[in-house]
Image (cartoon, rainbow, N blue to C red; front, side, top):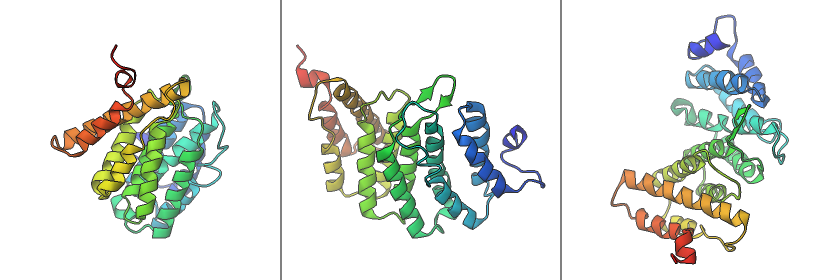
Length: 269
């Protein structure tokens, strides 16, 4: 397997891509980071990017990735190795959807169905760990952010789904769990791309920003949720700043950040 990875997914003539792909996906459940991430996922990504499958196999891959045995494998568990299967399965979604030549030919109903599955997964996952010592990256938040962004940018995704994707990103950005592995940047990139490229109406984006608020400012969960939201909004601010220093979104995001600024909330004294 290492030889195939080193050769950018070029397979020997004796190896068939589809059976290999199916076997590699099952390795996503492994707690061995080398097998799961460096070998299996890397080779899967290479096969997808070099167009190593037949057209209808990409559609089947999306269906498999988002089924009960993969994206929803033992959903609801926390602090268990099952998160690896779910997290790496959701990462297959942007890999397939982002393929420029294949993406346009994906059936509209399949794209919308996959989008619904990713949205359901985002609201159902309970294990949001980033890096797990001895086992490597789980990174369910960042992988889900990538999938949500890819789904939202596909032309087959309906406008109402795009609104729900933005709301899902907001909820992930306000999780009451420690997010210390650049999750804010990946979520911000997804939101920025959606607002910029999908032509999200200003009133929709304004309501979305207004929803970044905490009703309860006390307790551990509120502190974590507020800190995550503040970090996300700061990341989003700099995405817009780097794109256009005169962007009208900058003062709006800056105002939203003040809701989570401890010095603004409690006073500087």
